[in-house]
Image 1 (cartoon, helix red, strand yellow):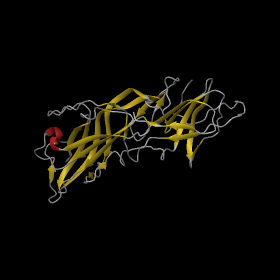
Image 2 (cartoon, rainbow, N blue to C red):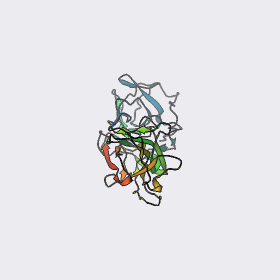
Image 3 (cartoon, helix red, strand yellow):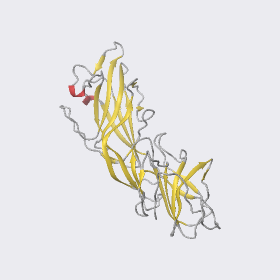
Image 4 (tube, rainbow, N blue to C red):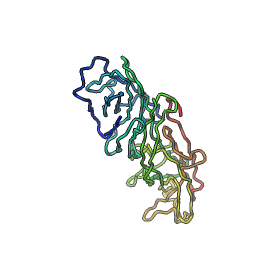
Length: 334
C-alpha cells in the first residue's frame, strides 16, 4: 500500500479497470469548530485530497474532492470494490511550496516538510469501509497548533506604536504521520516527527506605517503576514539577560510609546537599558516568554492566545502579560 505524490492533485485511476457494477464512492466531511475565522470548520472546508486502498490495490491516488453546494463531488467516479477500503484524506491540497512527501505504507503515511504559515492543515482517516449507498464520513482533525498574539493598550494618554512582532527560537517545520485509526474514534490522532529549523517567525511587519494599539485587543497574526499555524512543539524556558544575551522561546515586540498631548516619546527613553534599544531606530524592544507555567508546549489541535497589554513603562518587567490556551477542537476531545 503506497501513499505518494501528495504534492500533486489529480486522479490516477486505472483506465483498464472493469466496468463498475456497484455504488460509486461518495463522501461527507466534518471538521472541528475553529476558535477564529481563519481556522477551517465544517462550514468553510472547501476541498480535500483522498487516497484510498483496498486489499489488493490503490483505488484513489490524490483525488481532489470539492464542495458543490451541499454535497461533495469528484470526477471521474470511483466504484466500490468487493473488499473493504481504507481512506486517508488531507485538506487543503499540499503543493510544493507547502510541503514534501515520501513513499509511505499503511503504518507510515507521512507528509513531510510541513512549514508554519497560514495553512490550517486537516487530516481524516476512515478504515475498513464496505460498499454502501451513503457517503463515506470523514472526520477531520487539526494537525497544527494555532497561535494568536493579541496586542492592546488601556492607557488613553499614550499612543503605543508597534513596528515588528516575532516569535523567537521556535521550530518552523516538521513531518506528520497520519494515524492508522479512524479519526472519529477517541484518541485517533497523528504524530509529529523530525521537527526542525529552530529559528524566528515574523508575524507582524509594519515598518512603513506602524500600528497604533487600542483598548480592543488586535490579533497581529491576522491580516498582515497571516502566520497563525505552527508546528506543535515544546517551548524552551526564556532566559532574560541584562547583558543582551537571551535564550529560550520568547515573543519580541518592537514598539514606541508616545504621549498624545505633547508628542513626546516616553519609551524608549534615557532610562531604557541599551540591550532594549534598536540601532538607527526610535523604537525599543520588549521581550516576553512563550513558555509559562500554564503553557509549556504547543499541542496539535489547540489554539494558544497570548495577550499583551502595553501601557506606560520604562522597563519590560512591568508590562502586563496573560497567556491562555483555548481548545479549538470540539470533535472528540484529546
